[in-house]
Length: 132
Image 1: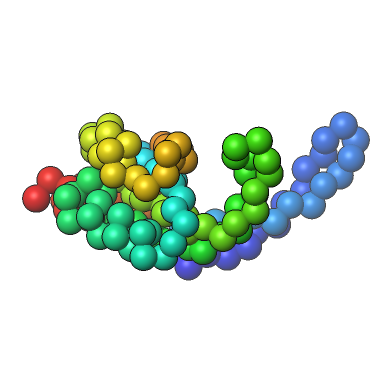
Image 2: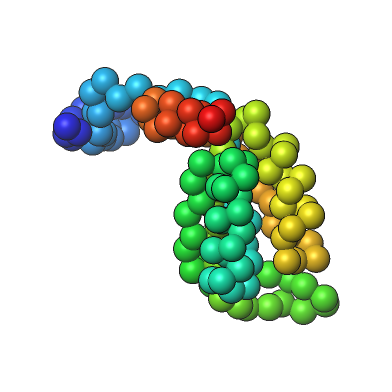
């Protein structure tokens, strides 16, 4: 169980009080990638998510409604979009990106990948699914 610990630190004669969270023995591991992309409808987001997971390009896709502001075709646009947060392994990332290039409904899809660490049991589950 997490709990707050307090400590004091001095930085250039300035005393700072810090509270931090100690998660105990939670073990984190690497080898996970998050890929972000957006689409303009919930139906398109759900279709992409299902196909990605069924093809074992990722183990999980979370979908959230977001408000996006971006520059497109010589103007600033504000629209509702659906953000897909795709969780995959390093080994599957390139295949996932190539598949999205071919199947994404946008002319210029947002494809942003981030290397991350995950709770070890979650990472184990992800890798087991992707290698079944």
